[in-house]
Length: 164
Image (cartoon, rainbow, N blue to C red; front, side, top):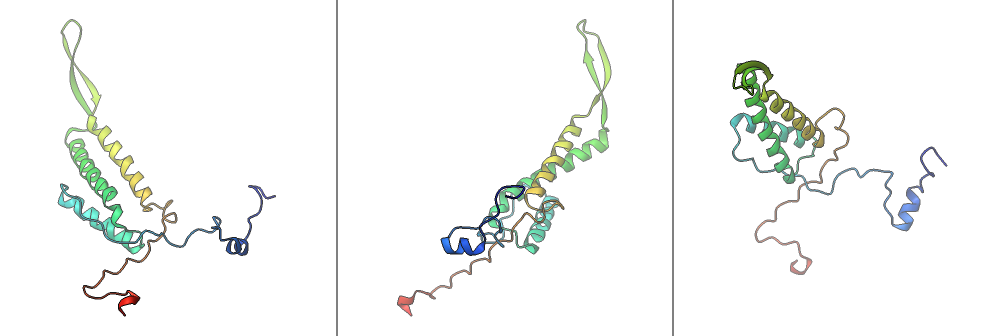
């Protein structure tokens, strides 16, 4: 008995019984690789980011058509983060706001800029998406490469043995 349970059965046992060996990871995913559609309604800068992320994932053979939605969400967050940073640069992190007391006197206080919360939220969500895609130093080894893309069938060509 080891530190974490009994010793594994071994590869020969699993081949004999036809059971999967969970101790050895699959070398690649069963999901076929491919390119997702471009997101709609995002800026040109966000599309550049989309293409850059697609190139990075394609180089690792981890890009699938199903990644389009999460990459599109990343692009939306990128746009929102850039707008928040522009507003913070113009207004500053601390702004002056006018408040009214119970006796209806007005006074000015220094308050935290709401764009700061938007920027922090976008940063956290962008890091989480990059982590899920395996594009952070910690998660780069957790993403399996996709299966090779299936070739498109040629019109008029069949591989059915009946027609050969």
